[in-house]
Amino acid sequence: MFRSRRSPLGLARATPGAPFDITLDGRPVPAFDGQSVAAALWADGVLSWRTTRGSGKPRGAFCAIGSCYDCLATINSRPNQRACLVPARPGDAVTTQKGHGRADLAV
Amino acid sequence: MFTRRTFDVVVVGAGVVGAACAFYTSRSGLCVAVVDRGPVAGGTTGAGEGNLLVSDKQPGPELDLALLSTRLWRELAEEFPATFEYEAKGGLVVAAQQDGLAALRTFAATQAAAGVQCEDVPHLADVEPHLAPGLAGGVRYPQDAQVQPALAAAHLLRASGARLLLGEEVIGVLRTTDGAVRGVRTPRGDLLAPAVVNAAGTWGGQVAELAGTSLPVLPRRGFVLVTEPLPRVVRHKVYAADYVADVASGSAALQTSAVVEGTAAGPVLIGASRERVGFDRSLSTEVLGKLARQAQELFPVLRGVRVMRTYHGFRPYLPDHHPAIGADGRVPGLWHACGHEGAGVGLAPATGALIADGLAGSGGRLDRRAVDVRAFRPGRFGSGPPQPGRADAGAWPSAPGPTDRPPA
Image (cartoon, rainbow over the protein chains, first blue to last red):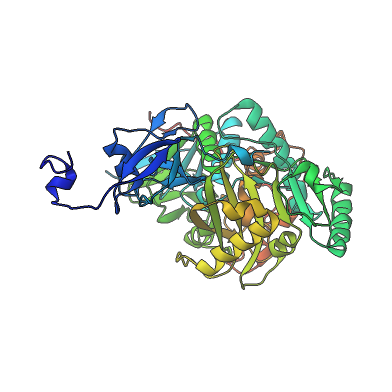
């Protein structure tokens, strides 16, 4: 499907190497070298990987250029990473972030 | 269109002090306008942390003013619940070493004698679990509290019912032939009133100059770091005992002492730097780095937390660190309510109530014996044209006469 002219890879005539896996909540998600975590999740049909602090509403990539901070995710146990800016690396573990993602620090 | 609008009182400045002046003055029955060249809380109010502190003040008139203000903030929070994030979180001052703790305890004892509630905290981890281990001890101040300052200013202005004129810069103070104030001029017209309150904060010296007098307000820059939103990791406003010495210092050089606190919205705020560099708005990474390091020393948990943004502002600083509150004395009808340095949010209600009391003449609701207002006389710095035959500021002249309401 990535060779389709309708896909971003096809339109850009990109020839990425073989995909590797990252995980979302333990489930494997394919990613290519140079792809952002958000792009990999989107390509896999995932649009939301965080819930808001106040009302628990779903959030994913909005601006996709690092400005809006909507796409925050917990990546390799580190919360509040902008998924649209973090390059995917083999084995990266993305977990759906609830609110601020720092509940463990509460006193 | 050039218009003439008539009021009993014109307050210059829509920060928290101007808002409090408008609130209490309107409540005493006078017709008030608030004029500001920018938006509500566009100056130092919007750059503050919203601290309402008694803990950092040594016994004296400013502490008395802070104690009065603390009571008034509590009343306001009850009258306007859940509007400006009032939080009676309490302050916690910590000392790293035993000798510092001894000095802190001695200082707290003098404050307690002046009416401040102080509690010795031998085991800091019981009250602040994330504090660095190994600190000698601390003192807790239950009366310290916090508000969101911009919200507080906005709600006080709304509740005052005062006419709010934003984006309208005062370019002149109108005076009668015998020198008394009769209003202000803006590019849009004249605001006529027999009393003008200078609540222009760090820019109060410029308003005084427009009125033909002087007030030596200087800017003292401060930075605040804002972390990513967190759950409650810091319960109190926590700071090191050195902070008190920094507040009282007259030095122009950079001083930093970590002041760390959580907010209702989640981010932790980290202050507080003080430096006299004029109105230089450029970012100082040196200051930001120092603040971050000191905050991490107090709260090691912050090492793994990201700073989301920073902001800075200019505290209105008078040479003796006391605000100017009261009638000018050199220019009849001119009142000052500015120069509160870093304590403007905390001291705003008491300042507004004192100004309202003075404007309303005798019979105000405040017990003035609670605060010795002579320490805040605007004329105490000398200079400016003397006004023969008039008592110096601090005297509370009679109320302005009633005027017609402005056209609707």
